[in-house]
Every structure is written in C-alpha cells, then in structure tokens.
Image (tube, rainbow, N blue to C red; front, side, top):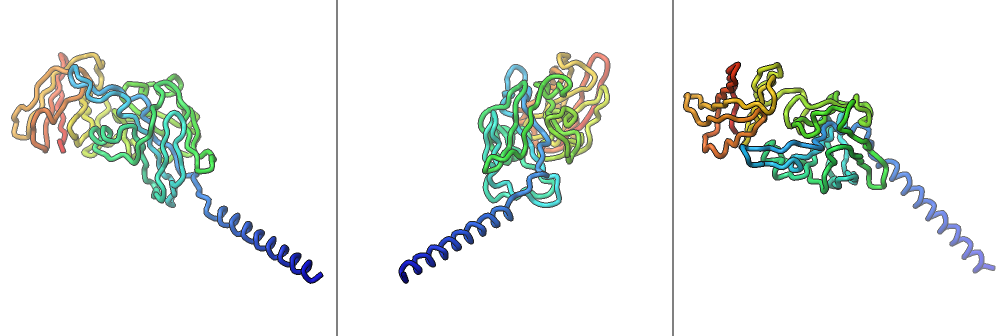
Length: 292
C-alpha cells in the first residue's frame, strides 16, 4: 500500500513538472515572437537591361538583379530566421537587427552590384527573378508568410522596369499598402534604380533634371562606368559626347547611343570633377559629374 502511494505521488509530481515546463516553454515562445509588420519591400530590379559599352556587353541583365527591403517602423526588426523562398532563395543571417528606416538589399551578383553601384549588397540570393511575372515570398523560420506578392510586367503595372533600365519601386517611401496591387508601385525616377535609399530622384550631387533635353548622368558621383542619358530623344538616336577636365583638357570624344555606358576606367583619367558636353543635330547641352 505504501509503495503504491509513493508511486502515485511520484507520478503526480512528474506530471506537474512536465506541465510546468510546457507552460514555461509556451510562454517564452509567445514573448519572443517578432513583429514583421513594418518590414516592407520597396524596390525590385527583376529585369535589368544589359549594360553595353560600344559593342561589348559589360554587364548582363541578370547580373544587376536585386530586391530591397526597408524597416518603415520606429523599432529595430530581428531578421533571424527569415527566408526569401520563391524563384530565388536567400536565408537572412542570424542575429541581425534592421534599424528604423534602414534598408536590406539582396543582390544576385554582389561583386558586380558593388562595381556598378559602388555599394555593398546585404546578401546574395540564388536563382533569378522572371522577366515577366513572379511570386515573391518571404517567410519566417516556421513558415509564416511575412511578405507575399506577385509582380507583373504588363499594364496596369509599370512597363519601364521590364528591361528598359528603370526598377520597380514603391510609390510611398514608407509603404503600407498591398504589393500585389499595381497602385503600390511605380517606375524608379533614376535609371538603374536607387538601392539602399528612397527613390526621390536625388543623386549625391543634385537632383537630375528630368525635363526634355536634360542630360542625366548616373551614377553621380561615378565609379568606373557612367550612363549618359539625354531626355527627349529616342534611345536609338546617336549623340556626340565630349568629356573635359576642369582645366579644359579633352579626355573623351565619341558618338554614342542614348543611355549608352562609358568606361571611365579605360580612359586612365584622374578622379575629380569633369564636364560633359552632349550634342545632337538640334542642341548642345553641358553637365558635370564627379569621378570617385
């Protein structure tokens, strides 16, 4: 009888112990759950255009693919356990806090992303985004969807991000709408997009003039390559381009197509301020840029 009571007492204490452990574990899990409601997708370069210097393709379109996320809230977000898991795959690193209004940009080819934009990508995804339509899915470690939308390359969605040099960016700098809705998106104001910052049309020196017949140089300050764009003329039209030092020395002269890339590194020029003159049969325009 005594042995039976001892066994019964031990069984009750054991059950209570496991129950207590279970309750403690459940309470701890709930307390540590992360709020991802302020993590938003703000830019997508799903179909970049080829970067061409003369007859040479400097960067293939796939090389410049990237996706940008932003914390629009006032508190940091722990990215641990998040996965980009659709046509492209990327695991966010552990113990990374994304601060308020900060960006996280994942690129297909970080080395080329750095060479072109002069910025270090936050990560490197595997695979490629479709040039037409694709689901973009981000989920947490247990499979809960954090971001899930499908982009499109046809009307009423913006058409310029489909291989014409612009990227897909959110209309609002701190978006709260549904990225499945085309009204969430617009084309980037800047050719090749604006990773790691709000797409407000501002480059590091000044806002580019987007009116007709304005010369737009991107990126500015430049790294080893710059794109020259003359607003108001067709991309297939050629224009004469001359680049001068501040002392008036001519370092480059050629007839190129609109939006063509110039390889500054091949010119063996010094870093500094330069003036660029663009000429067509109807006008001559002058602008300036910094070569870093």
